[in-house]
Image 1 (cartoon, rainbow, N blue to C red):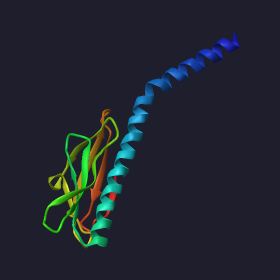
Image 2 (cartoon, helix red, strand yellow):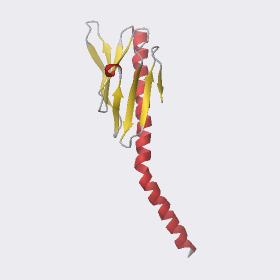
Image 3 (cartoon, rainbow, N blue to C red):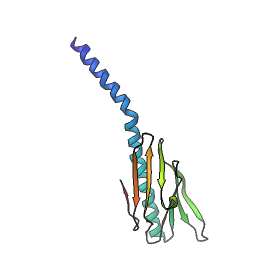
Image 4 (cartoon, helix red, strand yellow):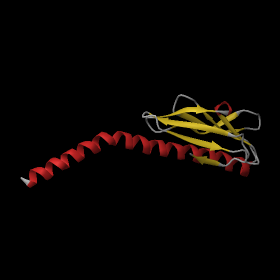
Length: 137
């Protein structure tokens, strides 16, 4: 009788965990996406300073796509590493500054915020200040 009770309780706990699993996975993907964006912005800043050429990160709002680019001597932009995508279920909800964050040769950037969201409505904000420093909220 006690064994049946223990197995029943274990089954209920497993069922509850199974229902919560998609939300947990989605939150982890959102966390990873925010840090991927931070890493890309940091890369753009570092490359701008060390190479004395402007770099920018452009976001496609409403999608999961963004791209890191370098300004060439002729003024055109060249993609570095191709188009990047956020993990499944994560999208770029909004991005100010025209969804384009341009880093000068001094590593400076216009203030801006990129808002990432998952399918459950959770959001993470990636914030850039004028000195090019990036943080996640």
